[in-house]
Length: 263
Image 1 (tube, helix red, strand yellow):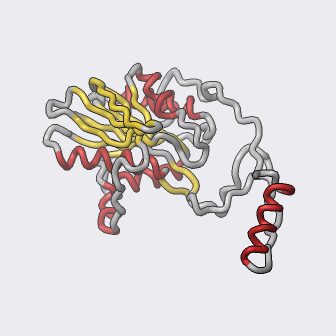
Image 2 (image 1 turned 180 degrees about the vertical axis):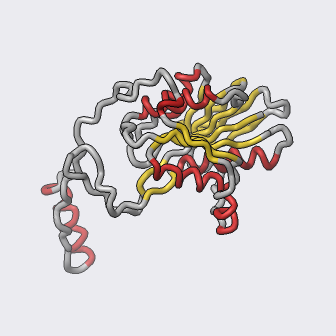
């Protein structure tokens, strides 16, 4: 059994995001890029399956992106992945998750040994589109289960049970393998890559592919067009309510009712 974890690189959630002058990208000059947190759940789940089962041969991490995206793969390798595949294209449209899925599918089909299980985050924290996993499953012709919070793999690795949180209940889906799973927060707790493992990760194999290695792809993208990026409107200045507690409560209710019109 072989497992693949799809990882993407995103801006750190603590970073201050500014729109670039072109209005179509963010100013990355002072932004730290990290492995997408939801993808870390996928990596951790893949590594735990390998550690707990004798039938898992290896865990492969794959990313699509520019040269800096290799850092996300280093994180995956330090967490326990065995090898990595980097489809490197500096001109790849970062906003086009459908195209990224098509590229990832081509790289996966290129692996002659094949995979039995693909794990990826349910979304990336920069765009929150949630398209990448389902689109990848569609390009591969695989079934997929989204936003999985608990995973159970059968002893013979022929099927799995995926538990999903739905409003007021839990949904349990059983699927044969191969299957693609998108991982929800809480599926597992990702381990912290230690310094020794970060050093070991540098010696693990990382294959770099380009568009030339994946013939038949249209590098213009799969059809998603980014029209414009704009920052959120500025928030009004904070107003302080003073006085005794009862006076402040009355004034707050008045402001919420008459000015904010939210009550």
